[in-house]
Length: 487
Image (tube, rainbow, N blue to C red; front, side, top):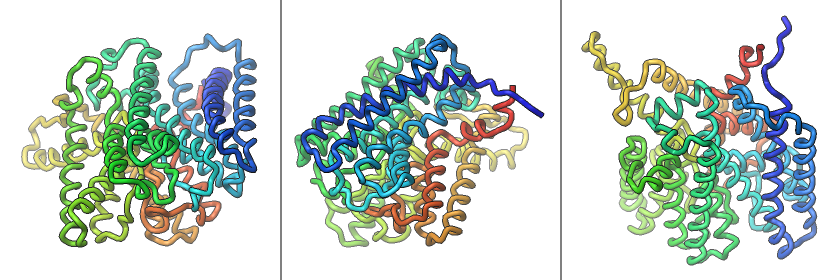
């Protein structure tokens, strides 16, 4: 049976053209660094910018008759899912032209890891890579992090998408009309706050032991929960002051940006009343202190070192940023298992962090407790509540289902990687690191590790895991279903 799609392909191409123009503009902003630190392949950035901008202009000109078309929910799902691929395809050009990576797969892997804010890398000696390429590498994460916030907070709620309506309304209890009824105004305010945090962190890091270049690169990677660094040793190559500053901004990046915006706009502390945020802080403080005590008394570390490494590692894992200051895989096994579980949970909804998100974790725990009570009191009405609001039965079912599907995808990733010859620890570490968009895992992909040794097939599997973790599983499942494409 033949069926036609409802997707407005010219409109989708026009949107992708606009995204390519934005990407090309960001490539142009790297050119001053290219000029100051030009090398053998200094043409790579300007040539990549030229190709990207020309492609964007061509798409806009070819679809100029569709500039007033309205976006449907199907178009929205489609755009969100393929944008990461389109941006990464053109974003890989600087890596390839500069000979920073040996082949297309590695270049696409590095770019996709950036735009999905995963932070997995195939680079082994990061300091040997040209400075303009490393700046672009951090910039891909900054662009990807902003895109995640804009998509999940300012655009998708207005597309009448069932999954995202549940995500932003039923679970978070946020009235997005309070932000602003006009989408573009909301986008500008979010962009302004995102930029402000980036610049503020850059200035604070510059006051420490980083030069402006390193400060800017790490700020963009922090705010986006990305984790790309200009050093192979990550933040371990910098001072305690820089590590503390990055820790604070990792916490901000793991918070719900809509709540941050509301708190700043209304001069109130709306975020402090949010149960998800309070859970985030409680876990961070409790685990940071607990792991710090084990490192202090069990590993004979000094007081300052123990708690600095503990809190930094907990925050980095919880927000799925992936920075590191020490090799946590050298700690007692149960400690890095705790970090592994934090990577699985992830940060707050509406943040740049990956993982299943804390609100789903809350619903799962609350519903499990209530199920035990329902066994004792089968006729009792015991709704699951988050932030004082009841979650519908369908909402609970969808989110619990999401967690199980997420865990199933993780297990499938582990099995497939084992089948390709990857050792067990590395398979587990790489699967959760890419699916939760952490980047740094355990085994060969632990702190300071690289993905360069993975077979070609494994790298494409890991790239699929990055996309699955970034676009939310239900969105991609919807896109792959037959009903989505039927007219």
